[in-house]
Length: 209
View 1: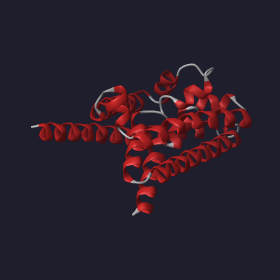
View 2: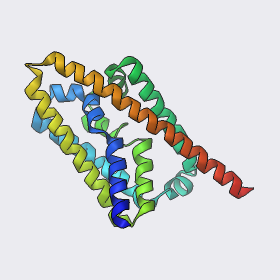
View 3: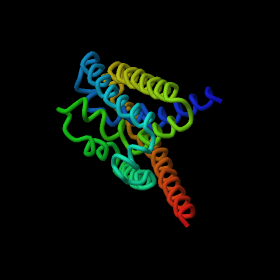
């Protein structure tokens, strides 16, 4: 049972981190930074994310109810709406929508961590990981998912650097196609987040009644 919860938590977070979409989101950094500099910036961003995810996995929705004094359902609904808007913008506009959201590339580590690593989907996945299993296994599943995402993005950068000079049009087509497919997946997850938030809210109302 613990193994299944570990695998489910790992897969959910890894899908939400989405190395393919993340590589498009960081495309200007992939093109502008060398392998070593990019790797350092990516690892720092992932470490920031790990601390936040581990805190939510261990504390659960108590952070919302006791510290922030808001309902976890509200976070799911609002976060789902944000991700839905992002997904719709990407499907309609393309990679320019992601670059607008990321902002200036000068603040590399922070812009890597936010908003796509530390976001409504990944935070809720961390809370869910903590509710499914012990804190140790939850944190470990988060760490494995982050490391897998780092490795995948670094591999994508290496392939991009090798192919870009010879097959620029192919790379551009890959960015467009994979980005739009990923946006459809994110949009689906966003709708599911909204529905889960509504379900929790209705359950709370029924319990109060």
